[in-house]
Image (cartoon, rainbow over all chains, first blue to last red):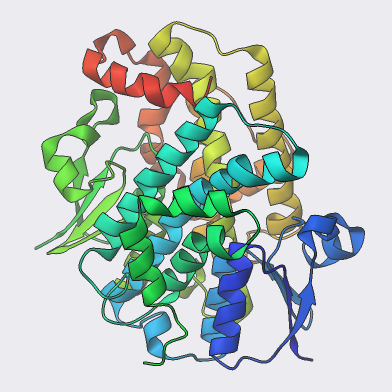
Length: 211
Length: 240
């Protein structure tokens, strides 16, 4: 039976998996789980992932959650090109380091910024106190700076001359503001201005380019 | 040049790395970075890790942060027995899944309990509001339940019959509230698993690694450097 992926492309971790699977020619059946309709909270979906979150994967009877784990599973099972998760010890460690760091750093800030700046006001009609929003955006700034100063530096990609899982996870995160809700433009504008150079670097080296 | 591990065993991620290295006979220099004295903010340590976090590893010119990355690195470099990070696709995926999930689901709530029950009152002299404590406990309990139902189930260890990196990381993190005399191993399933993991590690090594945490309630927080206390107050605001 073909691999099943339960995704909503509104979600960054889902996009990382979608791009990775497509890019590597991994055959899969796409199940869209509409977050905006609350489909992830359904009993049916809980059978696939009791944590009620996307992304989730089903490979025959084996179910898996957590995008990093799914990306690694696909990497190992489908023997993708080495640069995604290099076999070389230190290069691999660098990918692991980024994938670990981002959970409580960039991912957290991006999620909070998205909710506080846009999701809550637009979908729930509530305003978030300005001090809260300011603190969140300040934290996001710090994390984007770390991405630039510690991880990217002067290299072409996060861990060296070639794209890896780290770049894929990072770029889908910083793209969040642009692609998700095109009608909400004010958010798009001031979010990117202060880190234009990092975001430009990252999106310029997006995986769609052949290498 | 021998491997250097920059750690303070008050930190759960440090304990995971320490226990793993010792258990597998990996030679290293223990570089003690005293969190209680604020040494993670020292010029020397900032050069090792500008994010000022522990643990860090230095292997010649190669410096690595993030305990999960360090554990994988040590596992591979020193060819640790395969049960720690099984080659089987599904078992390995479960370890990866737990390692990803635990950052926000286990490590943060367990650390919060220690801050709320011991460190904040001790350092600031203030109590955290009851409602905040209750919310933290609720979240922690919910996640511990998910741990039991999804990761542990009826198995001996997370991947089955043998201990892996996932059990090690899970346990050291769940031990963190012990520093405030709060025991999370209330269900018999969790308590039995805890004992099994301790025995698989070796009780002597396990308790050696947890000694500093166990003595935390005896720490004289009045000796805390005022500049460190100031830095902490911003951090503490998050928990209030």
